[in-house]
Length: 114
Length: 110
Image (cartoon, rainbow over the protein chains, first blue to last red):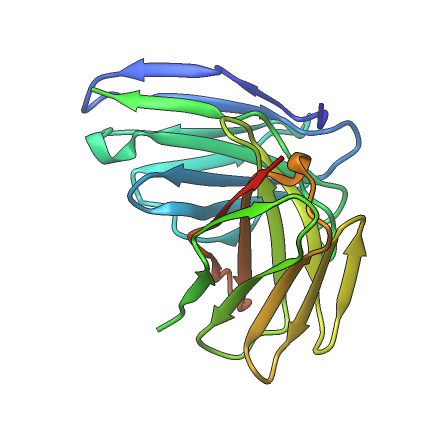
């Protein structure tokens, strides 16, 4: 158990809908990262937050947004969902924001868009 | 174009053997990460390599980085069944550009 929790574990929704994925980092970790893993695109880095502020932005679509709250949990919002958004979404946390910091991954949320 | 290529993509090997997974990338970087993913599970960070010549070892796994050749290797020594997993490398070019390889699915036969 990495100490990172993600909810929900599974999510099934329809095209055009909006969903919110939640991530709670390990106690004391200030950085949260979001990743997408799909059969088509493989693993992709989406976005990183550090202590409430956006720190790095990867291949995140404009239909997607994220935020990190004062209690350090993070949410990834996916809107106008398309079939191709079906994927596993992982979050990870690390203590700080340095490139050498070990990231600890949550169990993931499996999103199915029908 | 920024590219990361892993090979092989699939590897079936006997316990006790040694093997190497390769991660080639297109443009100079001195930041490379290795991850492990068990079937149906999440990711686990294995190694962070941050300079030319960096070598990190954990148990039967050893990772190295040659920034001039734009190549990282993950070497498995005397493989055991528990190392069966998919291994990913990822290259960080800064400016928020991080690209993962397609992964190497490793199956170690008892």
